Amino acid sequence: MVANEKLPHPDREDIELTSVLFALSDEARLALVQQLKEGPMDMANCSALDPNAPKSTRSHQVKVLREAGVIVSELHGRNRRLTLRREDIDSRFPGLLESVLRG
Amino acid sequence: MVANEKLPHPDREDIELTSVLFALSDEARLALVQQLKEGPMDMANCSALDPNAPKSTRSHQVKVLREAGVIVSELHGRNRRLTLRREDIDSRFPGLLESVLRG
DNA sequence: ACCATAGTTCGATAATAGTTGAACTGTTTG
DNA sequence: CAAACAGTTCAACTATTATCGAACTATGGT
Image (cartoon, rainbow over all chains, first blue to last red; front, side, top):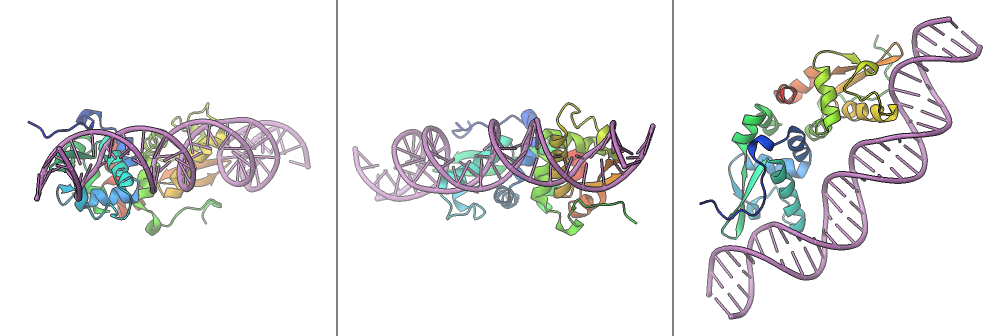
């Protein structure tokens, strides 16, 4: 049913505040999240992920956000489609995303 | 007028979101901030700052929060009185502290 | 089947952060 | 003024993160 996952994502109840705050405490990662507030987007199309940076670097930046539970990264064609876990974060930490996405 | 300061604090407008998020992304520092939401408190009385830890360690933990603009550390007798910069943070990033202090 | 695309993973290295003891600064108390 | 108190600063060390090239994996297109 679900697109091939393979990459681990924490369950909603396992999302930790400190991990989320850490993931968002980096300019590049924060910029990506800001971009994703508009809606899901393929990694390849995210201008927030510096296209000049090596792909291993971009992959790592996405990984930190994924492992913290901030975004979902799912296979979509031969791309990775990134989606902000808005409801999960809102449910765990009401108001957090809203305030961060404004900043 | 103001108690002897010496330690630098960023002006309100210089407080950066990523620095604040980073400062709050550590368990020990977050616990201290949680404690300070009740009101100002002297370092020496903060149970959130592990009393068994060396004072250089406690001093460093406080420094990160101070330099990020999360707390004020002012001389008060021979103690340091720590105060959450609630209005400054609220003004810069509305809703952020409220959501973090609940988590 | 083959090749290109879009990533992931691994291993090495660089950069940033955290911990701590020792020496130092400023303040209150005797 | 001297000792005690409360912390800061410094320097060395450890630990965690970030960056990046190279090899690998999976999918789509021809």
